[in-house]
Image (cartoon, rainbow, N blue to C red; front, side, top):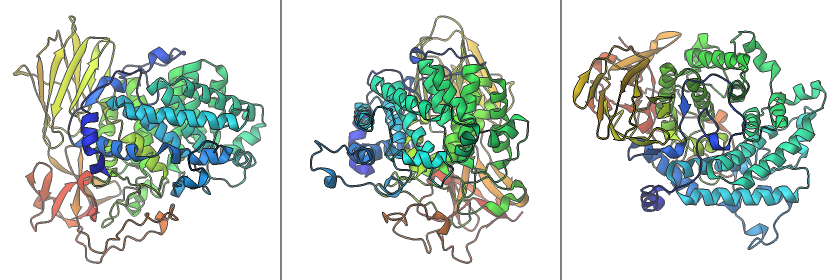
Length: 636
């Protein structure tokens, strides 16, 4: 599928179209022309709109292009079919109901979660439009919004909009078994908001406001015990979505709805300084704190900031694997037995997607290089590694089980939550390369890219083959007349950087996990060259020093264990299969060699290594359709 669109995408990505505001969700500094609520929380760094940053050719943009190809192949009529089915709106459709091929998996008509992918896809279309300027993705977004508006009208005057009947909400309110209706509504609402912010689609905001009208009438005024009972069911980041809607409309009812989804039973312990996550469902937990992050930014709610920071520090400090990913079998676990949980179901991709969203908010508050360090680790070693470089399909889990392999989605029959977040993740690599203060540019990621800081009149280009090489070069193409600080991240993994400005070496006094700040009056043609020394190192499991993973710079390296006994074709090509991961058997052959003497590993070229007995070791993000090992049994 990727090859089918490759020539088209090469032309599409070569140009940049002019369009309206853009960015991922709402972060400090984005969409200011479309926001009605002034931010009250303290902020040290601001995000750029995604339209102001362009990826240049390289390993990261390759993933974006594969994502683009897949998105281009997704049919709008098939995505919105379940919505039309729910509303009985088929009049005028060429060929009628029966002519529309049905998507399967989690989008099938008998799945409670149907419709969630449409919301993710709306957001992804906005992201891809922002990231590339390609009109195709705005057209897809606009077509989906038009279809959803038609469905909303057909469903009545309340404003309700979904691919499933309102009865699922009633079941949720009654505490009966149902699969996450508010989670799905969150994705739809967020997608509509993003269509308004990314693509300037005013109709999307109208539809979102009507959904909020329905939700307000449905929820506000119900007994407290009903609210608490309802919130026991996964509701995604609907609190964040309502906060974001409030930031656009200044309608206090939207803020009230966001507050309604404050989950006392789960996050009150954080409010009181307790950081024990127990075995709670990880991706249900993280979005609650993203909503609290928005509450802090919009309302200066210090307790919300404290909770978000405590949660983030606990998860990244104690619960993360070497890849930056979190969760096993979708849940938190006893970290004192960390090695026990290096299984085939680690690292749900949606969890990393949401942890990176939370990290972006925290970075804006403190401009912490340590937060950027985590972002880099999780981005390169999970998000980049999630996508199959052959097909563009994505993984639900990133297994840490030695001898396991990556299991990918399919174009027609999966549509798991991680497919939806995957559409977004691979469109927004450029979102966290640069941030800015009032008179300071933060360079956080080392990716080939172009930045246009419109307000300052600064344009620069970053060229690098990082992480295959340890040097990046920034060239100033246009500069303001006054002094400006450019702060380069000094990563925690780096040896002492060598920094040159126009060929002259600059003294580096900063420490790892901080910034090297160059404050001067820049001019067009100025060149900053930075070398970040990398070295091979081992990160051991926190509970067992005899288990360890290899890293080189920020990159997790994995051992290639071959293909013996692997299942082919993909186990999820069957349209009747949804989420049978926990019954999935990797059939790991006996005798796979997962023992390693780190001293025997030598670098061959770039990020390719091998052991003394000839075993290949390379970045986890480049190992596909093969068994691998990340956490070795160390023989020192």
